[in-house]
Length: 67
Image (cartoon, rainbow, N blue to C red; front, side):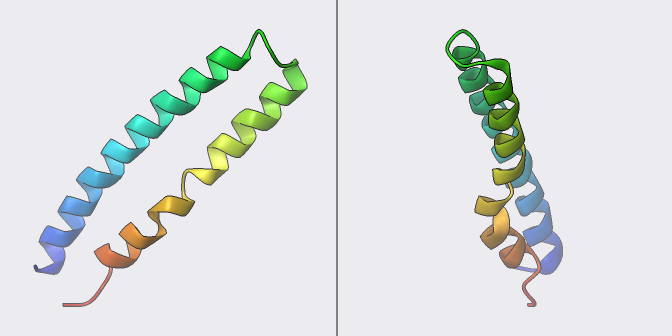
């Protein structure tokens, strides 16, 4: 698979992952609103906003791998 195809496919996977992750994180956050205090919600959203990148490291490595 050439580099151009790999990057295009990787972009599609990346966008799908981010969309699904955002929906799941927001749904969980909304479910937690009546249960946890405001400061804990802030921590939840801060952590959720950071950890999305870690599962994508192998995808980025694959996208940038030489032919």
